[in-house]
Amino acid sequence: MTKTETTPTEVVPARKPLKVLYADDMLQLRELITIVLARDGHTVETVPNGEEALEKIAAAAVAYDVVITDHHMPGINGLELVSSIRSQSFPGKIIVFSSELSQAVDAAYRRLKVDHILPKPIFPAQLRALFESL
Image 1 (cartoon, rainbow, N blue to C red):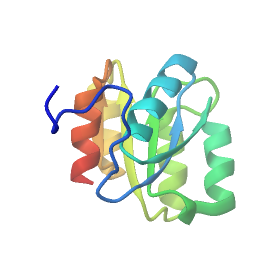
Image 2 (image 1 turned 30 degrees about the horizontal axis):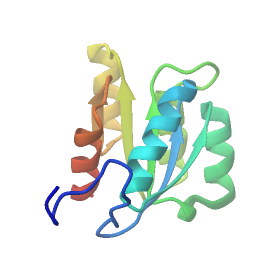
Image 3 (image 1 turned 180 degrees about the vertical axis):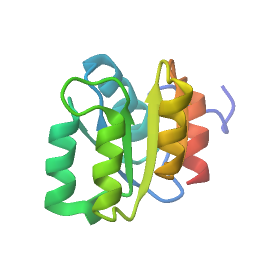
Image 4 (image 1 turned 45 degrees about the vertical axis):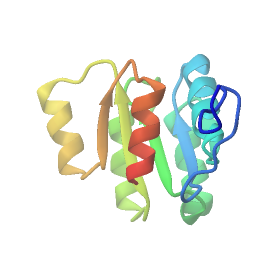
């Protein structure tokens, strides 16, 4: 291994560490995203649904630089979550992950001015590149 290579478990500081709130009903994805982003120095807080995400944002919206949400969740789905966040004037970035979106739902997210819509499965390299651009 050369001096410029990193091992998979090595933490690489981010240009600007971000505070992330990630809402997804799939525990494995929450764990994966946490690991990937933490390796780059970001702080990730996860919740299993939109209701808990709204509670966290209502308590301290400025505590998060980025909100990531799945679209398909029980209770409040991603679109409802984003709509509520936008009505609270959330100052950060919003990213949507989804395995599928209809044209109407995709258009609704775009009207709400989400910053990125990413299809699942998301690959760690894609996510890291996106965060480098934020």
